[in-house]
Image (cartoon, rainbow, N blue to C red; front, side):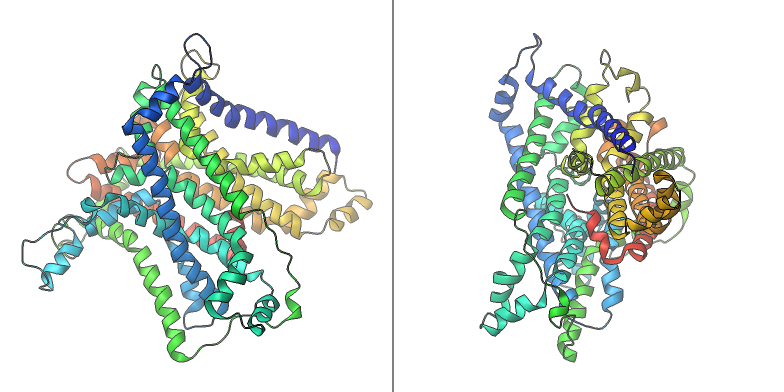
Length: 564
């Protein structure tokens, strides 16, 4: 490969990340730690950390992220172990349904779960109808513990990320290691905790880190639950003072620092060890058959957890098809009116067009930049290519809320990037934000394809007179097109339903993307939540088709995309 091309990619990538990744972060740090005279100060940080409201928000955010991650681990790890080790009825079908919770942003699912668990929701109506409580009795399941409700909604939405990584890690374990432990008397749970868990902990860390940071900085679910005692919501409400108030900057800086520290601690504690594996051919492995009773228990485990995980989705679907759902187990009237309105409302039609435009352009940027980055990282010997790999993965570790706030900060009037101020027109910043946030998926997919394709094919073409870059386009890219399609689809679909960037950067109705439109519709009185749910169902169908396509293209390799 041409060294000049590698250097060009290296230079352009550094410029892109300096302008739209590092610079926004520096603007946050400047706003939170530089006073009006241009001097370094920790006064804002000290005031923030002594304020019980802000300090409580940080504590709640941390506990919420920790609780969500623990819940997600407790859900995903047993499923991954059962899937890897045993054969049971419906395994293939139920395994594919594991990804269903990912077809809806958690904050949209929160609309459905509020309808089910609310004071006059479906659960209370069911309890009354069964005669377990007197008529007129109500209990606000969510109001009694909003914290737990948010954690559960996030955990059941995000556990597939840990599941995908856990399944991939379990598949890489040499069965001989576990068999040797069993021959020495280490069996059952003891063998799992002594042998299996240490071998897969790096895989669990890869997925758990994303879940933790996602939950730590989650904005949408907390807003839908009206839970303002977390840092992300406090930052959202502080946006109106971004021009002259340093405290939102300091708060975002603390969130950024906390995310990096949590990631570093997790990497140091769980991500360092790499255990060498013997070839699987040295021992017999693979899923084992079970007795009929145990096999059906495994099926029931998968089916039960999947049903609970899709309850928010079912709630959204039922709300979308109804015009009245109050104090009853199911809606009283079913119709398609909300779907007609959702595709004809003056708020939703432009939002769909805007999301298609933003996500499409962002995906084009990701594909061009991601293929070039992956090729340089895998194929070249250029010094510093590890820096490119590190930069390409960093958007997975840095919260979207932090980057979105940084984009606002760097584009304020009087700043160098004021010409793309989102208050006037957020189009450019939204495209950039979507592309930066989803670039890791394309890089990981393309890098996996390059690693699986022998370099000798390109060398053979070059020996026949084909220039290096032409050899890549004529030989290698057609061979890894499945990886590129999968990465591009994932980048496009998640950009279509991006939450933090959309809620923060889109400030005029004319430029609302889908997620901002759903949030604004939910805030409206009357039919607002029904139309918002209908729009959410359209989004769910779109993302479901996308994930189904990626699963067919990548199979178990899909988990490699969700790694920091």
